[in-house]
Amino acid sequence: MRSADAAAHPAADSAPAAWHWLLLTALIVLQSWTAAGMAGTPDTLRDLYFAQQLAAGQQWPLAGPVIYNTLHLGPVWYYLLGLAMWLVPHPLTVPVLTAAIAGLKYPLAYVIGRRYGGARLGLLFALAFFAPGWSSFILAAMTHTTVVESAMLFGLWCALYYRDRPGPTRALLLGLGATLMFHAHPTTLLIGSLLVAYATAATAGWATRARDLVLVAAVGLLSLLPMLIEQMLNGFADLNTLGSYAGRDPAVPTAARLVAMLLSLAGYGAEYTLRYWLELPDAARRALMILHLLALAACTLLALSSRCRERRRIAVLMLILLPLQSAFVLALRPVTPYWMIFAHLPLVAVLVALGLERLCEFGRAAQATVAIVLLVWSTWSVAIYVSLSHPPEEAYIPVAEPGRHGLMDVIHRLTKGERRNILLLAMNDRYTITTPLCGQTTLYAHYAEFIDQSLGVGLLVRCGRKDQVQIGGPPQGRALIGLRDHTWALIGATPQQRIAHLGYSDIGQMLHAGRPSPPAVAGKFPAHPDLPVQPQDFVVRGESAPGEFVVVSHRAAFHEPFEVGRASADGEPIEAVYRDHITAIFRAPTAATAAVRWEIPVHASPDHVDAVSVADAGNGQAAKP
Image 1 (cartoon, rainbow, N blue to C red):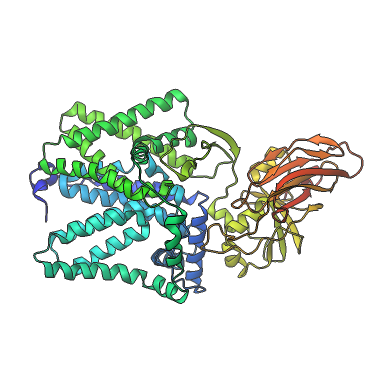
Image 2: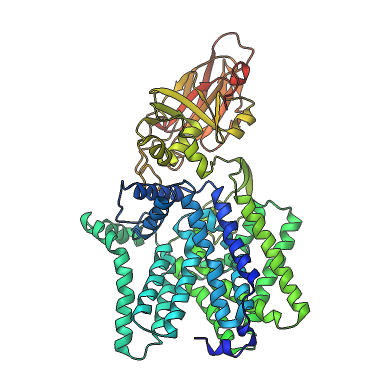
């Protein structure tokens, strides 16, 4: 059943071109390909762990992801990924499926847009989601929040489908759409509730409406039932955290914060991609931002000037919903991480699509202008995805102003940065590097970090267990230090062996051994909850052979600061040859004729710091492939 608006427009009768579907498929493939090469986040690794446990029948979680360490969702997301992992047992199943589900926003937008304006409006609505900005960040999250846009569009489609012919079956589908929105992220709660209200307003009477609302609520309650059972068994722990939430983190949606969020929606995300991901020169960045902002402003004005009354009303509705949604989100937390703004994006996309469609009505010159804008936006976004498709070795990292939170609070514009070494490893490589680890082994530096962050997922698949690997501390079994391949290149050394994008060697001397890290806990962030820390100034003292490298590494990066000062080797000052956020590497003088005595000042908890020496295998032992 088509709307009256669709019937009033000849464009609504146009059939979709085959190349439209090819383009939409290509966008999904682009997102999936990008995800396959990415490193993911701690949330991605948590999802991978539970998917793997479910596929193997080892765990049956009753609760899903936790929001802000306060509220658990139902386990829908984990079981969806677990089913996929059972069908396709591969480490890339989780990130690729996550990206593919997120990519469903393109055909969903196309179908919804075509319903109200034909194939052209459908295509414009789909491409509006490919415009650069905060939508470019969905893969940076790589977890359930990645699918917020798709879930919202599916919820909208369910609402429209219900309104076509209300009934119990469609009410259940509407409940499914609203439920999936909530499980994507609770920031969809406001718009999801409005969609349900809009859909059920089409029913003939109050009794029918009440019946269908009960069915919608039943679907949502059913999805949360396992979590509620777990809460009941654990004394409703989430109620305690929710009860203290307002006092712990008061959030007030002030006018200043509201205006800042709307400005962020318009430009901060897009500018971030140009400045920090693509690292364009100032002139090019300014030119693209001017074009971007002018295009958004023009689309908004054009949408409001549509010849069709219904489209004008939709545009006005979007402009009302944007500040309402912003106020809702700002009231949830005192800071707004980038994934909490994803629920705004479909509202912006509607304005963009309606504006571009209106511009197309002005003739061929206007249509050429639309094509140029879309080409610029698409090229920009493709460049972003290519830049994200592999973990960088170093990057220009944003530096927030004092008292601000960078990407953890999108209402602040980021303009400063510094170049740093980056410690990331692609998801597939996290499995590969477990090859030599089925025996008793102690790991240090990057190797320890990658295995610990991964929650042992690769070890469980390859070895069937993970307790044979110790993260830091006094050596037990074989003691290996591993560094990213580019780190070996930067320090001018060769490891004994290479695997994936990691090189590793047996350690030489143990200069300082902290306590081994406790087992990482899946579903917690950080993965070592309540880790005791006592950061303090102390000095690492020990010896190494001449020419050896001394690696000081830290295992509590989420919990405390880590600083390593200038070292002293036989009383002579030595600067680090490499640094990242968890390691500092020094090289002993090669001209020394006896063991080199080291003193290295460190600020951190001594229990979470290790210092080992390692020889350059290139000085006599070739690296093994």
